[in-house]
Length: 348
Ligand code: SF4
Ligand code: SF4
Image 1 (spheres, helix red, strand yellow):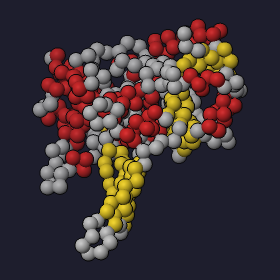
Image 2: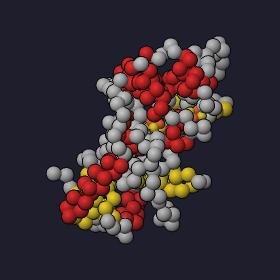
Image 3: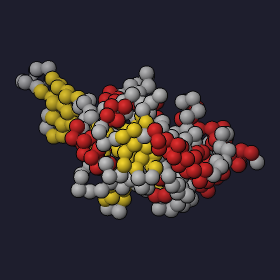
Image 4: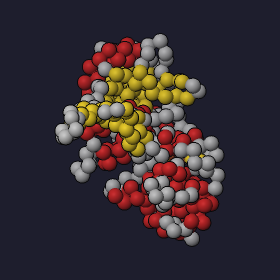
């Protein structure tokens, strides 16, 4: 049986300091009115109670990442040009501490894309392998949470290496993966067996607070059936202002763009997050755009998450139900309503 430990609130800073001494430690902190993951600073208290505004996506897949630097050389008019590449594949050992389960689960969706056999991505793989996720199960829910609709839940360990569950005075600490186990050796942790039953009660109570999930098991077919129904998509996207916030804050959105920065004979190639809700995302050099309206773009975003991706990946829904896109959308576009509307329309 995997080790079960306990960490008290008083001892938590000791554990965090020890972790930060050995590697990069990212924790959720308040910054500019939002909660975001930043390097641990003992002088700044982490925010562990509620879900972070932005998920820990950038810990493994940074918003902008240098892939390699390059230098061209040419000695003389007739000489053959040379090209030197310096790939930046090494990743810093990291612990992401205090994400909610939905934030860590997002990486399952990334893994199938960037760690697949066909096109393994060395940058992603190095960062994923160098990162340990110490996740905190939820003991409260918000009205935007719907993790239980998509095969997850408030204590889902998928994508995590350790799972902490809030109990009186601290947290029960459970090992989820072999990668997480060495972190349990800290003297700040004590045996947690006596707290295990209380943690199970917290998990059950939080799951019950979410209530019953509606049946969206036909979302794959229902959304595909609406593929050419642009009236439906115009209705759903009416309020959207194409700001892209939903994609940037989404733990499962993995699209990127490539740019080169440099001058003269040298420079660097960058990979940066891109957003399918933006007009430019599919704009072709000819001026043609296969997704010219926000209705086309929202169709792609929702269809990809609840239909096309699950079709390609054994039914796995490319949404972890975190509700960030619902909570942060300036005009309250609600992905839950859209999926349910498509499911209802298919039944009508
Ligand atoms: S956050 Fe809302 S308004 Fe902005 S692109 Fe997404 S759906 Fe549209
Ligand atoms: S689509 Fe919305 S609810 Fe689903 S994972 Fe992305 S941000 Fe969270």
